[in-house]
Length: 427
Image 1 (tube, rainbow, N blue to C red):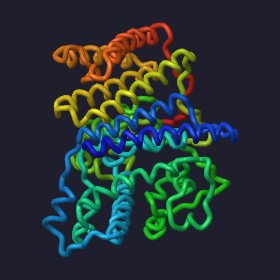
Image 2 (cartoon, helix red, strand yellow):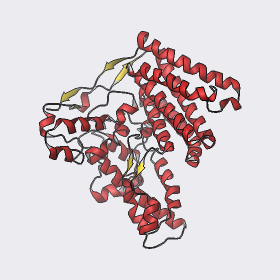
Image 3 (cartoon, rainbow, N blue to C red):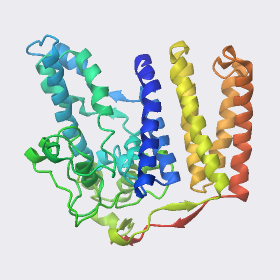
Image 4 (tube, rainbow, N blue to C red):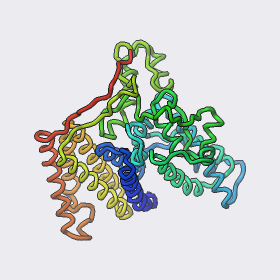
């Protein structure tokens, strides 16, 4: 956990710099790829995900270490070849994990956040799930475990494999010649993120594209079919926490609504989007029917509010980086207390970006939470007075101002939804 946090201390600023560079290049080329609130939502989602990972908020059904210790039929010595084999094995498992997440109702909930942005840019790559509570797909590493690939090799390669999926979330790179036949490129992944009927549920590969070609899920990007991004049942919120559980909430509701016990069981494992017959007519959901004439979700806000939202994101990044910097000095209790604060922080300002009462509501909860956490510590923000007492004063003042500003914006300068998706009821 501490080692991963130290890696993130460098990875997060690096990703932010790349996102900024992409934006500068897009402005220079005259291509609009970013929207202010969308980028804030994407970065906030990424922060939520990495903090959740740091806290270890997942239940491993069966670990790779257990499989390799008990089921290995041979042992492979560490060498450059075993690292290559591990990379290929992780990518093969990643293909199927990705595919199951798209094609099975329950598992779509753990992936919807990644597709929820109606833009396609580097920031949307950071939209990762916090709803993945059970680590179910470790079993797909079974071939590597049977071969006896050491756990330390998997632990080394897995983060590199994940980070290597960042770069191709962009519209600024066209097709890449012969590389299109080997690796996943921006063109391939634009297809994957599109909701065009021709592109849906294609190109599941994470690093190598030949898995899709071998298993029949490959689709080339066509000039005459420009990709349209997002999900067919638009999320209509900037709050990543609401997005993460949007699909699961519908499944839960349908579970209780349907009268068929057979449907109560199979709803979780049917193809994504399937609903019981006695439910879908009585409780219709809305989806985008005409993808080429829809209007993206957007909220109108003053320049003051937009600036404040950007400042909230910056403060959240600072709090997160400080968390990772001192995590080795914190008790397990303090680690969870700090992580939960970041969750409330993100929930608060992203809800306010929707103009929702949940913004000031969560901000009120945050104030009560902070007081209860800091009171036993003499109102010292997790040892920051050891660096400089003025830093602690600034943080305490920030919390007070943040609470007051949430009330001001909600009652006097609240963002308003200026456009909705063009939906047709699913009859």
